[in-house]
Length: 459
Image (tube, rainbow, N blue to C red; front, side):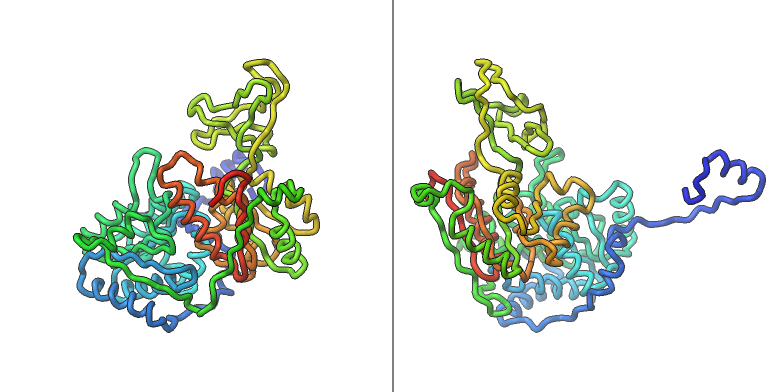
């Protein structure tokens, strides 16, 4: 309260006629939370001249939009090939024909960067945002804006596919290979399949974009007998820049040479050089927490989740053991419950341990970590990315949310820690998903990327 008085005093003043209550409706727009000065700084962008490959892809999709016909397209383009510019121009075409558009992104962390580009092109009044990090009130008001036709462009995570839009001109799914488009919680659904049915009902094109397409999508676009999806390819970067060089380092040789660090000597020297030259570095490790499992060295007992029967992960900052599947937590174990030995040891590496190691080896570098544990607060992911974008941070450490779709021009080095660890998970598509994530992360660098293999498995 601005007056610093109790509600009772206010009620008394109202009762005696000194104050009057006036009700005013205020819509909660998530975009209004963005710094107004930041939005004003974003100069309005216009259509860019498309390359021949971009133009060819655009015209094929535009034709289906004009015919009011359904067709699924796979836009298979290397990172930096200009897929987003095609999205922008197709959506502009939809608006010009008095229609609406839906754009899905796999991660909430991708929404801020995508929003910035769309605000710069269309203005914030045309755009509605839908994702799980919004409050219930914000989601209600955004839903209402869409329903009333005030916002004709919907951007969000998988749940945005259910937005109450009418006269849909196009549906776009960016990074279509991402597994997060499938909801594991009830009600279970696949946003891509839902989008396909909505596009058929709306008689509009469905555009699936990716630099590393899902193998099922790619098969449906290339098989001869029944081609359900049309393949569109972008083989060159839009600015004609070359792809970064990838260096693979086998840590077995590093161990033989006496290096027991999490970083290879090549990666260490490259980070050191980047810090000196005031350039930015991304370090990718797709395991959060500090240690990935806890084991008794005396009897071999491993601490597992009582619900899921999988290894618990140690989180050093909270001093807790956490299950990354169901969220169950328990206090750290100091004595083995099986043999009552105190020889409890922590094995494996997570982003917390990597952050600690980097701070130790590069004390003068500004470091920040981005994973599910650091983005629990509202808009925290946006703040982290904004700090990194504004060059306040030298090294960004994180899980896959730091490598999906982001564009950071000052990043000249990307390091992958334990690049082959995801090959060993119990998933028959582990090889495919490892290829996808490594391809995505390798192309985030303007210079080169260093892949660090684990001690035991060869790629």
